[in-house]
Length: 229
Ligand code: PEP
Image 1 (cartoon, rainbow, N blue to C red):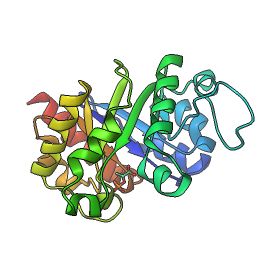
Image 2 (image 1 turned 60 degrees about the horizontal axis):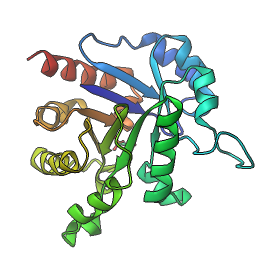
Image 3 (image 1 turned 90 degrees about the horizontal axis):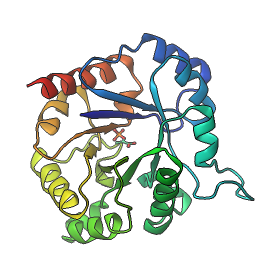
Image 4 (image 1 turned 120 degrees about the horizontal axis):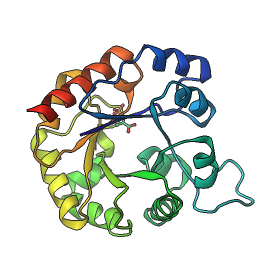
């Protein structure tokens, strides 16, 4: 079971250090935090496993604002998110560029959590399966690849997919690509148990609730308890 905290554009170096010093990663579950680039070094200094939130597909070059896999590895970062819906929505990320990022990062030696998920109107139109097929199919098969199913309508909205919806999407993704699949979208201590108990849910990508030590700890403890049972 893997629990990853996506901090988005929250927590500078000082706040990151304070969080990581206070956060006790529970035994029996793999825990990763994904701070902003500016705070990666502070998070790593505390011994936690740290992923970036994005990574470019080129080693170096004229790509202002981007960071390469080699640079992250030199810093000691273990992996990266790619294709998060906020990157798709606000920064022009596509299925193709997300796959390039994943492929190069894996090749360079990073672990990757590739995010996929349908928009609300796509679900309403019955297009969830087609969207997931389109997003998952360009991703490379790799032992360090994990997919996060994050229905976009559930991210930061307080709306959560039902455990049955999550299970159905995860089973589909796994039929396309044999990799662990995390659920993401308003995961909180109150709903983590029923989502993580689904047979094809291998962990969670947690946004808002990962910013608070108490709620992130509670989610990690739930995952550890379920892993033991
Ligand atoms: C995310 O940012 O990946 C996410 C799932 O956010 P939240 O948990 O806040 O919905």
